[in-house]
Image 1 (spheres, helix red, strand yellow):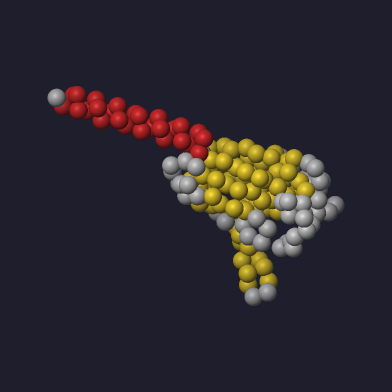
Image 2 (cartoon, helix red, strand yellow):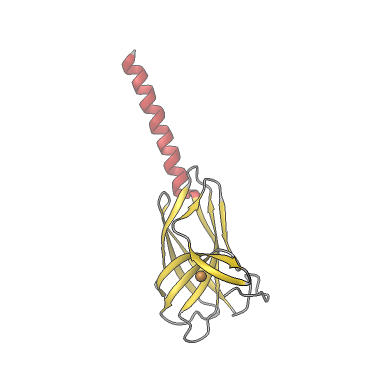
Length: 158
Ligand SMILES: [Cu+2]
């Protein structure tokens, strides 16, 4: 009796673990990663994307990297009177079912120590390392300087 009950509990636990693993594997979606072209000599660029956690567990972005930059940080834009300042966000929390939108005027990825300028039409590899979802890869599409994602003009916060 006890053994049977234990077996049922183990079975249920394994089924749950399998469900969770499936959800983790497909849970984290990186969408619409983009950036603006940078002028020659610019050491930094901001990049934007949507992080959509469709998994059942909340997650944290532990690190970000790109072969085109020495380092990639998550920044928030904080308004201090008329001055917009940037603050490092570490780690970035992405709750279960939450969509975190990085967009001009708000949170962004900061590519620091650019190896060369971002040119319009390029696709820049980007790797995000999550605590639960693990390594997720995407590409940053580079639009003309002064563009928003739709290609129109937009006030830049940098
Ligand atoms: Cu920044």
